[in-house]
Length: 220
Image (spheres, one colour):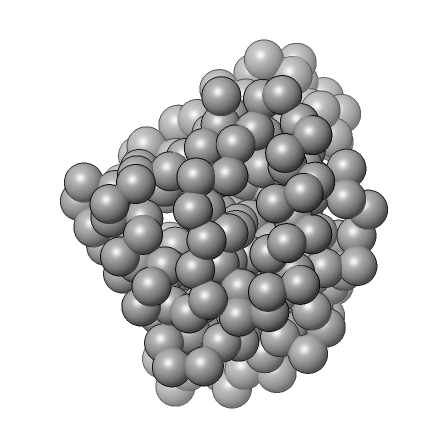
């Protein structure tokens, strides 16, 4: 059973998700919160597997709540941000705060349920429309005077650099294998080593690093 906390300042959204999850045998809503402070307290007390987090809320917003949840050394709760188009300016900040997934509120309900399962299984996901907007956010950010953050040279092979570039472009392990003419198992092994060498918490974090290292340009 995957234990879920719902965080949204709109009761109608929480009710809809709660009713949806109630009909799903492998998911369970264990708590609800209407703002970020309440969400942090709820996660600390209940230790759910996944928190479905809105971004814009009165008082403490979803980004700050995500940061506090992620910073708690005892927390294993993964944050799935459920956003709207109006929230796109905050996507990068929430990723940096520790969110492991992004979906948009107008997606099919079954997709949202699948997203909860994906996070609980230890993977990460970003809705395609959010990915495009995330890239646009990178493009709009001013170039730092010192240029891109340097990719740590120690232990990163040329092949792993290629794999990181493709991860940054949004390719799956199967697509990476096809692009580099290697097996899917080999592609997965390269990605796993990148997690370790770059201290990345999930695939979303690898995408961020690929942009910060200058391996992927937003205009491409």
